[in-house]
Each structure stands twice: as C-alpha cells, then as structure tokens.
Length: 107
Image 1 (cartoon, rainbow, N blue to C red):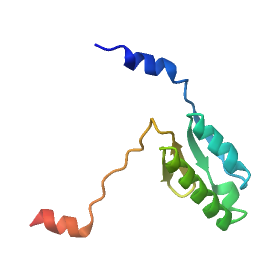
Image 2: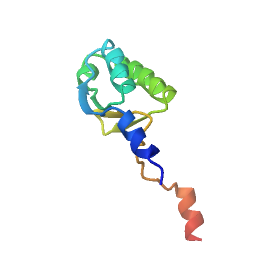
Image 3: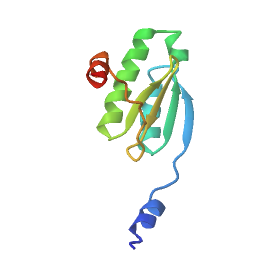
Image 4: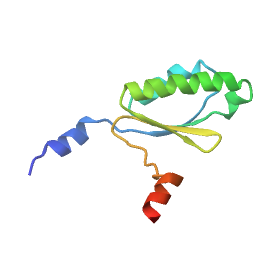
C-alpha cells in the first residue's frame, strides 16, 4: 500500500464551494483567480443579464475557454447559474439518448 495518495491529499490545499454573482465583465478576472486557486464556483449570471445579455455571452465564453485551458469543467445550472470546477473535479452529466439511439436500441 502506497502512502502517496494521502500525501497528495495533504499537498492539495482545502477547496471551497463559493457562490458568486457575475455583475460585470470586470468580475471575470476574479472568477478565473478563484477557479485557478482550486475553488468550486456557482455563478449567478442574472445581475449581468439584467444589464446586457451580450456581456453575459462574452463573459461565459471567456470563462468556458479558460476553464477548459486549465483542465477544469463548466456547466449550466438552469437559466440563472453556471457551475465551474477545477481539474480535480468532474461534473456528472446524465447521458441523453437521441431519438436515433432510441430507435436502434428498441429494434
């Protein structure tokens, strides 16, 4: 039995789950820093969406590219929220079956 697993856990600092509002494009840099620090983020995009839907799209696209570039994961949580996780966490997604796949499995 190797002790490297417990050593890796000790080496990684504590991660936090943080709920943050996305109020402006200036918040993007703060969000990137939080994710890079290893925190799990739930972003509420409504504050910025009330001002500019285009800015929301711009911010989410930038955050998507950044998250993928560091090996993290990002997903939408309903209409108002986005979840972002660092590389050591994976977001579970239910496999959706397309109509074509349904026809193939039913035959």
